[in-house]
Image 1 (cartoon, rainbow, N blue to C red):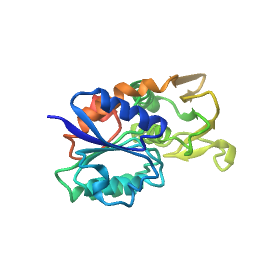
Image 2: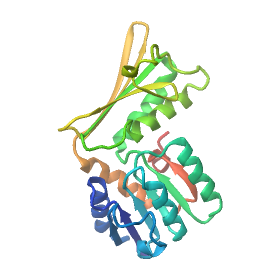
Image 3: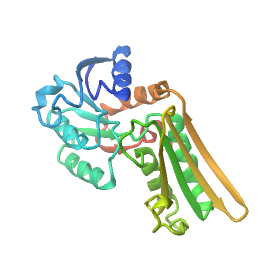
Length: 248
């Protein structure tokens, strides 16, 4: 059985890659290739061409409306757009409670290496009093901090539930970064970079840095395949590629 898929944001870097992956897999058929300007956030559900799976890789401002419209079309949704805060996820989770036969998978990062790097950081986090994140992306990335960094900070805080928040002095100063779940995040936007995340953990007399470096967008393809294979059978809300890979 072939699963029809619509990709919203297909004219962007990540969206173009997602569309290419869909087209190369015999179990999927690309039935709609939409840009962020095609009105998928406000048009009727028919804009998705009868897709059973809708992939949203657009921009944070449009993503929630696109996802809601896709759910109203009856599709399951794969979200690769950044900016899905805890509040947005809570709203989506609530919406899915009224749709027991549908599911959504929100993936801050499709790189398997990135997922593993974040998982390693959560293992190390309870053992160090101070943790900070430095994330670097290409100059065209419009949101900061990145969704990957936000997710990493949230998971670090969860891993430190018994020991408490990280030590982060002078966070009232803007140069100290933006705190997410007590973890300072510093965002760099530079030409010539794809994506880099450093989680710096520090304690008396030692520092541990867990670094993940994406050199080419092709690194996202295996994670996209895994997410596509899983999303059609999901029910309710799942967050993170690790949930379908069994990592974390």
